[in-house]
Amino acid sequence: MKLDDTLWAYHTTYKTPIGTSPYRLVYGKPCQLPVDMEQKAYCAVKELNMDPKLSGEKRLLQLNELDEFRLQAYERFYLYKEKTKRWHDKKILNKEFQIGDKVLLFNSRYKLFPGKLRSRWYGPYIPSQML
Image (cartoon, rainbow, N blue to C red; front, top):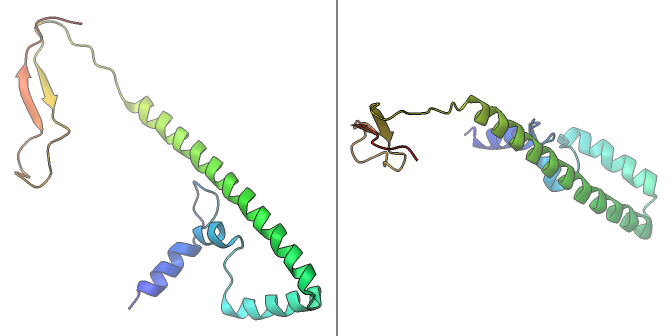
């Protein structure tokens, strides 16, 4: 029952990484409630005075602005991804092992469902030479 409300909230919520809402990326304008739409429609008719040529030119300008807006959102998202990657890479510690140390091997390809409670760590192994 709440799915429509949830989807509406998701589409109209401002997303920080891209700097806008998904609705604005698709339609090129912020989301308006139905009450606001009546006022906007009245203002548009009054402003354009029902001239089809003028309204067509205005629509072309809006489409060009939409392409620029999407490009800016893509750049913001790309910068956000780089920033999070730098933060993640900063948290990774390089560990150097010596000959004779006991080490464990982490199997990242281990599937989740077969044997869920089994450990992903194998070993201990003892390095015999360093590369």
